[in-house]
Image (cartoon, rainbow, N blue to C red; front, side, top):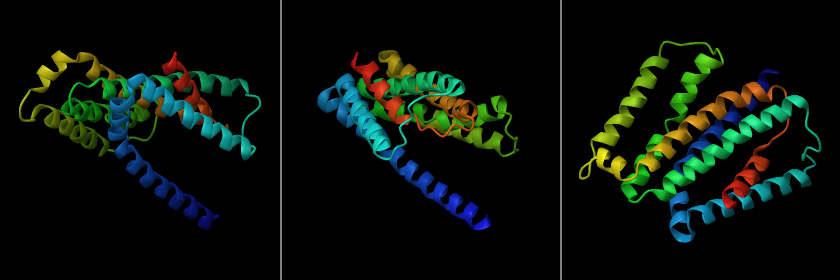
Length: 209
């Protein structure tokens, strides 16, 4: 059991590092797609294709659920809505930014979601509170504030006044993804389903419409 637990922890750690690498290129990738084929066309294409691939892989592996339990339906509806909102907000924030500087600022605001997730997990999921959480959150918020307000050239206030929706979308994305992260574990319970391909497909359909 000890070896199995260690193997699981190692696998999760590797997956975590891979996630950091993938997340780090997301902003640049989304901006590139938006500039080449448009915000909505790019987003819809990306999510529909990735969702279709995910559903196909689940089908081949025999892991495509045929029915859903009552608790799973609630999980799909609530978390699915938050998932779609985040993806929509994120693409709109990055794609609608008028300058590359705004892209970086929107990306930075969007990445407040880990801080919001930690704080929300303590408040709403009753996770054990540790003293170093407070200075960690304070440092993250301070870093965001300093980065946004210390740039050379146009002030962030000017950028916000010119394109307020970009920053609103970015912050809305941070809130919606934090809520998704907090509620997913609670609502999923012991469910073994992987709804991400379905969420991706629905997101693509919503953006396409």
